[in-house]
Every structure is written in C-alpha cells, then in structure tokens.
Image (cartoon, rainbow, N blue to C red):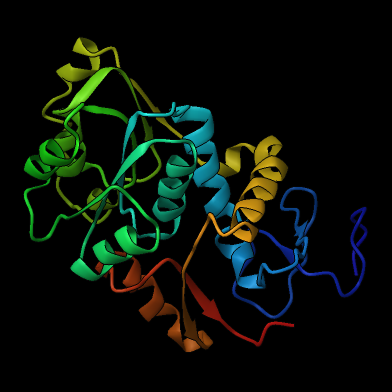
Length: 259
C-alpha cells in the first residue's frame, strides 16, 4: 500500500531501494510508478527507459547538443549507457565512432547499432584508430572511461567541442593518485566544454526522455541489450562483471519472473 498520490496496490515501482523483501519509504526516498508501454518489456525500465536511458538522453541531447554531420565518439559504446548514447547520436545525424573491449562487441556496434566505426581498445591503439576514423576531427565525446581513452579523444578535438563526462571507470579501482589528462591544454586551445553529470539530477527531463526512447524503440531505431544473472546469490559475481566487461548491455540481477 502507499500514501503517495498516484500509487495503488499492484503497481510496479522503482527507486533507489535495498536488496530486501520489504521496504518502507518516505518523501526523502520516493518511488516512481513504472509506466508499461506496448512492446517494451519490464527489463527496459532498468535500461532503455530507466535511469540508464535517461542518462544517455540527457548527456547527448542537453550537454553535447549534437548537430547533423558532426563526429561523436562514445567510450564503452557497447555498454548500457554508451550503446543508447551512440544510437541517439546516429538519430541526430552524427558520424558516431564507438570504443569498446572486444571484437564481438565491435561487430554488434557496426552490424546492429549501425555505428560508422568501432575500435577495440584492447587490440588497437585508440588514438591512431581515432585519427583514421575521425578525418574531420571530433566534435563531441560521450565519456564513460577517462584516462588514456579521454586523452586520445583530446588529441583530435575541434574548436568548441563538447565532452559529457558520464563515468570514469578506468580510474575507480586505482589506489594511487590518478594523473590528470596529459592534454589538458586542449581545453583552452580549442575552447572546450567539459561537463560532468548524473542523469538522476534532471527529474524534469525524465518524461520527455522516456517517451522519446520508447518511441524510437517501437519504430525499430533503438536497440538495447540486457545481461541477466539469476538469483540473490549472483549479486557479487554480477557486480564484478561491471569491471571485467564480460557482459553485454545493462546488467540485471533477476530475483523473480516478470509479473
């Protein structure tokens, strides 16, 4: 039951809750109703039309503000957020180059997501590959990795390029001090805009983002993947997959069948 307006028993809700059977929430940690859409499964609420998709939408539409014909680079382009961001870039008319960590993921980016180029950072020199695939330079970067991959993009940015910093996963487990980008002078020389952001900070954009993402999916213009691990006991293994990269798309632990 709920005293929150708009909710009734039987509704499916989501929020920042714990791994538990029951939870008591209040206005400091509210839940939101899941709006079921035809042809969009419930798992999409944790990916395409949830915080993941909203984050990609806000980063691309509101921060990068892509223009047709521009070149966009997306790191972890086969991941949950990156794959949606890359497809939004294509819908906006950009040339999109994705960076990922395996040949199989590169094939998915090229064959299904229809990106213009894909780079396997584990087997290729990222900067050299970017020079080859971005002959007109880089106008926007959707950054999920940081470190050497961000430096590689900074080498090729055009004047007034925009960089949306969504994640810095290459530095999360580093114990030593993380050095700053070695090409930081590019920020001044090319008058760059670099903005860090969290999708959840923009609740006023949720409805528009969800409607647009669902519409693109229903039109066959937006693909997404989920990687499901079953059972509560799978949680430690699932968390580790975030750092090994041995998963495709949004990582989900499923505790019960979809109602």
